[in-house]
Amino acid sequence: MPRITQLGRVMAPVSDQDEAIAFYTSRLGFSLAADIPYGDGERWVEVAPPSGGAAVALVPPHGELMIVEDQP
Image (cartoon, rainbow, N blue to C red):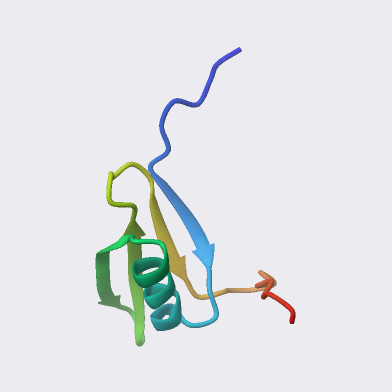
């Protein structure tokens, strides 16, 4: 059976890209790899772990995509 040996990018829907950037960079030690404006006020944001590897694209939700947030 084939095995996954590398992962390039994962898209994570977030309700607030700035809050997500702050979480990934300050709490998890990731670096901001991309923050590029495009379209009608949208932006492409990626963070990555210090050792490289997979990047996490922090994207706003679209359509019926749901965001699950921690409950107190």
